[in-house]
Amino acid sequence: MSIEPIALYPPHPSTVRAQATSLTYDKVNGRVAYAMGRSIFVRPVDPHSAVKSFQFSKHTAPTTVAAFAPNGNYIASGDESGHVKIWDTSVYGDKDVLKEAPLVKSDFPILSGAIKSIAWDADNSRVIAVGEGKEKFGHCFTWDSGNSIGEIQGHSDVINTVDIKAQRPYRAATAGNDKAVVFYTGPPFKFDKSIRDHHTNTVRAVKFSPDGKYLLSVGSDRLVVVYDGKTGEFVTKIENAHEGGIFGVWWFGDSKKFATCSADNSVKVWSVESWESTQTLKVGDAVTVENQLVGLVVTDKYIIALSLNGNLNYFDVDDGSLQVVQGHQSAITATLVVGHSLVTGGSDGSIYKWTIDGDSLKSVPQFVGGHSNYVVDLAYDKNLISVGWDDKLKVWDLDNGTSVSETVLVAQPKKLVKQNGSVSVLFENSLTDFTITESIQKGTDTVLKYDSSDVDVLAEKLLLTNLSDNKIESASLKFDVIRGSPSLVRVSPDEQYVALGDSTGKYIIYNADASIKTTRWTYHTSKIVDAKWSPDSQFLLSGGLDSNLLVYSIKRISKVVQAPLAHQSGISRVEWLHYDFEGSGHGVVASTGFDGAVKVWKVDLSVFK
Image (tube, rainbow, N blue to C red):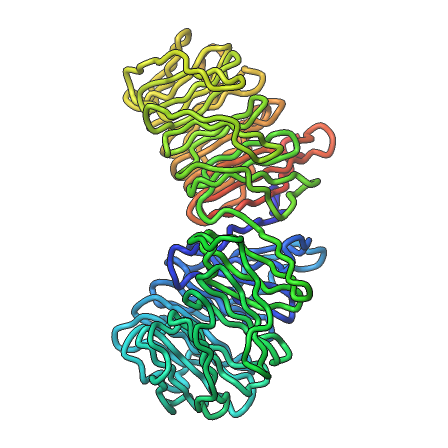
């Protein structure tokens, strides 16, 4: 391969949909997995681990839940269309090289609505999936053939959660919006009893203890209810276990303790011997909506709790110390390389700084700040400059992650560009100049006679895309009209070439005098979203909505290298991290996607020599 993957840095779980907040844990290999967008992401338990994360992206609908098989070899994942896919998690070969995308072993349409919870039996052969439906709210089946092994009955509303006891004789439990906990015997699994006397609100989670002795249920009524794991008989309950609704429960491996997480921003550890809390772990001093804890797993080293804002909170099992790992929770919409850092901005307004570490990135980014909405573009001039859909221009101290100054813009920005010691903000049909020193001073407003989407600088003159006439506008040069609608314009570092990309996936490369260098770069099949020239102006790195990552060469115009389907749902931004054409003959590039992921790739440029 001329472009091969080096590393994936996954987004954090989306908490927009309640069913997408569950985490799953692979004890055998030390990994956690979760749903995000149309993908399932698998990452090491230790956030600083060198073990590589990977992505499963073969769902066609937004994913909702994932569950590891007990042996860690397979994951069952569900989506909003009611499909469950079973796939192989062993994607890395010798030398930690990605050998292939995860292989789908089975794919079954289970329900008519979203899958909300999945459980495996201890034999790694039977699966129960539950959620929303019309004729039924759950189904039991064998993972390889899809044969039915029982019926999920006893509920009158959506089922939120399911679990299977790890010892024979097997037992299963489900619970949901109808406030009922239903107990099953099997396999084949069949209804045993419905328990409706305890919960007074939605039940969020059920969990059998590892030794099978107990079953727990927790819910929005702040109750923890304890049942006999073999018979389903009521044992006891803990009232007002938290000061908010309880979203998750997970057992410690020795079955002597369990943990719960709640909307009151806390995790509590409970003793089975006394059924009392022995430890309370808080996220922040004040109770806030963004710190509500909506997902939970207990690993050998950490209690990992997911906040509503997407933060992963790692509590040390031994001393309770907290490490908060932040990250993007939505599409990445802006990138910039500043020194030894990659800065990324997201559609949720967040801005992060990643440290470039050799041919990859350090796995935990630093939160810089953000906008209240979509980050449109980033620039750097002594400080980081950003514009967003909150109609603001902001200046940040990138080293300290603090805001320096900000100003309100007249409209929604399209692009930022540096020019002659100032920055210009492009709007749909106007430009505004700003000078940034200790504060932000507004300069000249320029009204355009056309709509524009992108801007760059050539010989201290602005080049703007003209969406009305399909061409580049320049004060000193005349560019020809093109067939497609222009999507971006990029001037090479040596100012010898101008790349104009369009909505059909084609490039026209101009010389500095506006004469055409080539029209043969036509390998994208849909809109070109972003492109960056190499430092020596010899190569153009390109990403598009077709999800293809391409590298074109000025000297060998007819040759191109590519990584097809680099990101699910399309590439949003591309950057050069390292470049050594004359020496090692390779480069390292980063791409970001509408899937929220950051990916790093090694490009073999020697094929162009």
